[in-house]
Image (tube, rainbow, N blue to C red):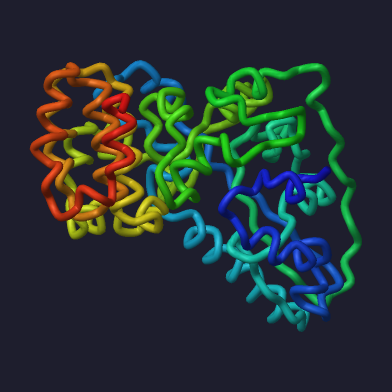
Length: 338
């Protein structure tokens, strides 16, 4: 059975709904005769594992530590497309992964890299740190040589996954993937996976970062993709205290903004629950009465990980008669073991 048939796509219903469109570029644009595929290096200057043991700090995926890559890439694709139209009379359309384009197979066919065992693209020149974009055109261009698979017997990416999201090489169960859970998943994160997430609050780079081909990678030359200082090692307490306006201001122009304050603070609270840091208990307690039930539920779990049983019972009793208790009663009962 395939990825969709086994439900590995989780909440991403658009993948199933648009499966037929992803199978053939012509379904997106019937006049397309060629696809020009481009890669943009976003290699980090910092060690992707630098925050692994920083319990009081949140770990944001390398790709999301500055400007939204969609905006950065689309601007460059449009410049190329404009040149193709002006110099060669081409009709063109540009795509960055918001459309149902099978980017990685196209990139492999174009010779940029190959789809590794972690299902992401791997490049012999840039390792695992490449964004992709495409220019569809009605020009009949000669295809370049395709890239072949160079993973060999290596399985470092599969073994590195904290939540064991790879049922087999070249297959991923998104429902267990931390990137999916922290970004795409809209509801409460499954309780059994929360302790495995560590301090990852937006995405996860583990399977990318351990790839041996990264020894050939270089730091990005695009300043818009270099990590912002405030996202290199953000403090969990500071992030948890963001209201909606503060969240929007902090992440203006960032891909993080698209998940909204509720999902983001949910992620931060999971990290707080995993921190083992007693001083963060008050931060979690302060969010037990948050207006968003997603945040309140995550706060209950975080408090249950940091507070003693008697304190937890006292807090539950204090909130039992609030108007919003019913929205998170299951979280309270589970936390109390009842």
